[in-house]
Length: 334
Image (cartoon, rainbow, N blue to C red; front, side, top):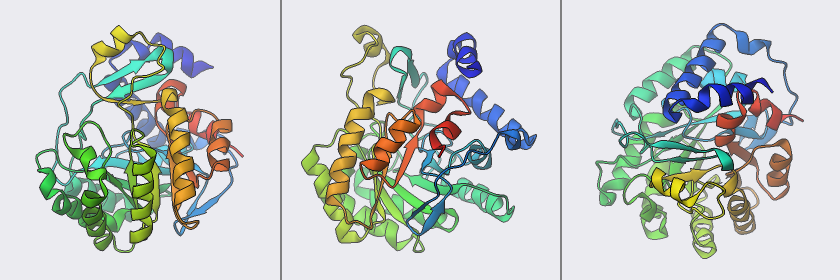
């Protein structure tokens, strides 16, 4: 395959974040030149979920298009839905670089980006312009998180502001309380803290579906508690999972991993736990509530495995980095 060779010879030699920006530029340029329209259309099974119609079950997880700048192009290369963000109410530059690392032997990534984004107000205006252009777009989810400068005790108002600004342009809203890269954020997964946040977002959602995104590092009993809360509040569903702080079962040497430092691990090493979380969620949510399964999916066969285990939709990200721009179409094929 051309892309893996290109990756090994060129992109893999670049700093990962530089390679990401270069890749985003290339995708947007190809779309602007209408080159993405030349790709053969892959037939995929349409999915009806959350009152929305998806052209296929496989979409792009939050973290790739943080600022909603490549949505159309990402849809054209095969993602049925694009979850932008994570977006915060207050613009922020994120953590200091370097903050993105490749574990090539594991086809995995470690990131500690820290919700770098342009902020809810700017991104809302960008989405308003995009929506008004009447272009064909994938389903757009908007993933919102806590601003770093906002204390955990003030998180409700922070999420509420983002939801109010962004809901008019979202087809669904994902509440991120599970990134390991914002201090104190994961404590918001505790039901007592999570309930008022979700209630506030639902209140500002304009009736759009609201989901919560959880970490793979939660114990099963805590996942069940979140599922019970989702039923109590009649959430549209749960996204499982975010990145993990675990460093178990890696082929990359322990010394190399340690040198990369803190951050969330994504890719194939997360696959088994992500599948376990999916099964716990499916068992404990109502039948009409959605599970979006994320973590370690690289192939069409793995997509089918998640769907057969009860996922309504599946998302990926890390595979895009290693397998290239034709990856989504290959995974989403019928």
